[in-house]
Image (cartoon, rainbow, N blue to C red; front, side):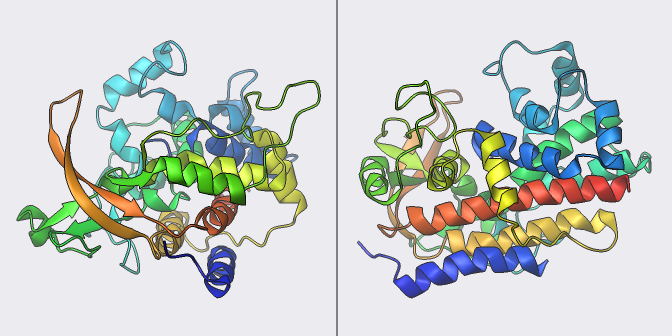
Length: 364
C-alpha cells in the first residue's frame, strides 16, 4: 500500500501548525475533555473565569461540561437530568448542531453553501456567542438558549469544530471518486454523501497492527497495571472495519495522548500548554469567529483526506431504521497514524485555545 513520503509527512505536520498560526462525537470524551482542560488552565485568574464559574454548578469546570452536548443524545453518560430533558425537548434537531458538511475540496464555509444548514455547527456556535454577549434576540437566538445552555454548547462545539471531519466532508461520485458536488447533483442522486466519513470504512485489523508498530505504548500510571483504563491506554480490540469518522473522533486522540505520554485530559492540557504552542485566535467581530474556526478546520480536512483512496462499494442496512445505504472501503497510507495523530494534537490544542480566546473576548 502507498505510504506518505518523509517530505509529505513533514509537510502535513507543518501544515497543521501553519494553519493554526494563520489565523457522531467529535474527538470522543477524552478529546473534548482535553479541549475543556486547556481552556480551564488558560482562563485561570481572568475575568472570563469568574463569569464562567457563575454559570457553572458547584464542582463543574469546562473540562467536566465539555461532553454535556453529547451526553444529551442518550443515557450512556448516565441518567438524563431534568436540565438535559428540557433541552432535548426544546431542541429536537440538537444532534445537527455538532457539524457541517462542506465538501472538503472547497476553500471556505459560506452561508447556504453545499452541505451547510441553518442549524449547523457554525450557526449554532454564532448563536451561543451572541447569547453570552447579552445580544440575544429572536433573530440571533432562535432556539432560545439560556446563557448556561450557551456555555454548555459552545464549550462542546469549540472542540467539534476543530475536528476536521466535522467540517470538511467527502462526497463520492458514481465511479468512486471524491468530488465537490453541486446541490443539484446531490438532489439528483448523481453524487453520494459519505456522511462525514461514517460511510468510509477502514480495515481496522490492519490499522491496529500497523499503528502498534508506529505509535508508542501508553505510559503506565504508578500503582495501576499496564493497560488500565485511561485516555492514553491502549486502543480497544480491533473491529473488522472502522468508519473514517470514528478514526478521527477517537483513534487519533488515543495516538496523540500516547505520543506525548499523557494518560488523562488534564495531563494532555498541561503538556501542550507547557510546549508554548503557536496558536493564533480568530480576529474581528465575534460573530465571524465560528466562520474562521470552520475555515481553519476545512483546510486541515484537505490534509486528512490526502492520499486516502476510495475502494469497492457495498450496501449496509441500518439496524435501527431499516434504511439501506452505500458504504465504501477506504485505504490509507501505512504510516497515516503518524501525521494524523500530529494533526489531532494540533487541533485539540487549537480547540482549547480558541475556546479560551472567545470567552476572554466575551468577558474581557
